[in-house]
Image 1 (tube, rainbow, N blue to C red):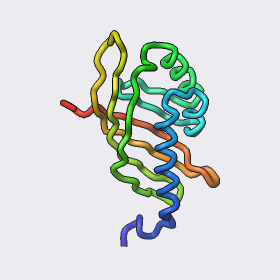
Image 2 (cartoon, rainbow, N blue to C red; image 1 turned 180 degrees about the vertical axis):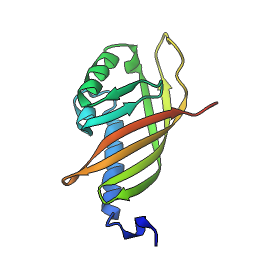
Image 3 (cartoon, rainbow, N blue to C red; image 1 turned 60 degrees about the vertical axis):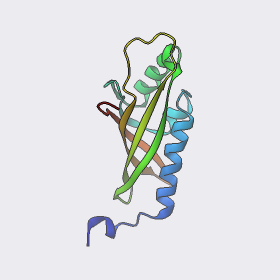
Length: 139
């Protein structure tokens, strides 16, 4: 018996996590909603390698980004796997596709990335504790 077989992680938990990922996708340029889907001490590493520590730093960086041509860079996410670690922690593996509609690009972004969330249960809700995007070579 593996550790994951002993967990009380349910189909409802997986559904809630997938809904969290979808909500994050839909709010990708919303400087209020997207940060609220993250834990206060979340860590974010974007596809360009920029690391942010905590929701406040994320809010500041996001506000700056959406006030710049970066607002024209959007992404889509395809969830590949949701894997429980404990009853209150799960790892979400996804593929992120980058859609860069900027008229003048200052440095090309990779078109695809391996996108990982670590999500944690807080009360009845799930929040993103870590978001990490690793560029896929040639993708």
